[in-house]
Image 1 (cartoon, rainbow, N blue to C red):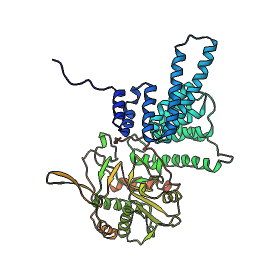
Image 2: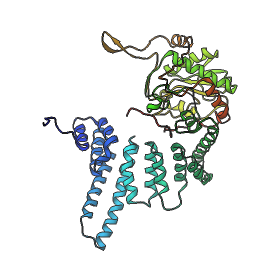
Image 3: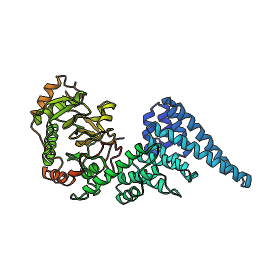
Image 4: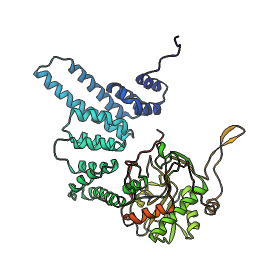
Length: 458
């Protein structure tokens, strides 16, 4: 018996069909999953056509140069070898490496570092002694959360690593969970000198602070294990994770959320858990600082009521204050830049931290880690007469919504019963061990979830 169903399209055909339909984002998602099944020239050509559709002219130009160099390399491979041909081939190899490097660089610049890895890796193989190519490959791997590959790209260099490359190895070692490698490279990382010493000094201090926190976490129960989400979150970012997701822990989430509809009860529970941490450290902020976006203002006003503190507008140099954000990615860049610098007694709490796109300033206390969230007072989907409809957001004044939130009884979601228990005593014990290294360093941007993986939507 034969089937009349058409044969499934191959990866290249699928990419071309998506291009023909103008579905450029779909092409990028497809290449992220199936890109390695394409030849390198097809891979570059498809990405070039995406860039053309997006109006990225410089990326198109570098793709054209890479395609021309790939075609020349294929032609040279078919030529009988003699001394003159070998010299030309060597020059062609260098030209191809440069062209692939420039194309990969443009991919990184346009936010698709995960697709830059392949051309940059090919460039590094063709020009193994060019450190600039290796550092760009390592940067692309780092942004793609391929931290061991980033380390390998640099450690494969035959020679002494320059300062920045050694820093990259140490930093990616931490993100990969390889503490011995991170410690070894940091020990060989001298205090920087010269014109860039201030900027490089901040990078060195970031790694030093991470190593100090990691050493503290190692003293907790199960510290820095393969599923120690709270421990690794603290070691990398300095933030105390107040709650772990009680759903899908052993099904790929390991304590993080993918998509979640937040609730008043869960927000109230996050404030209660924040109070547990503050009490455990004997911390008593004098005010609650309100960030200007609506969601943060609601959360901040509710926190002020919950802790019986006066609410004040956010000022960067205000000390002894609890700064409250719902989602820091909604904050203005200048606010995030100010929050990176710590004031005495200033504590930054974020209700819903995006772990796939972390904020530019890491919070000191984190309500929960999620990919996408709908705030309780925002729009929501409801079933009405058998159809799914989107409701309007709550248009009440922020003070009224905040009052309702502050008066809500906290609820600890029991989840699916598969997540390890996380009572207040566990959180208190964690803070008791790591507390001396908490609130002690700059609030850095860490663009990776680290060595504890979780499933996510692409």
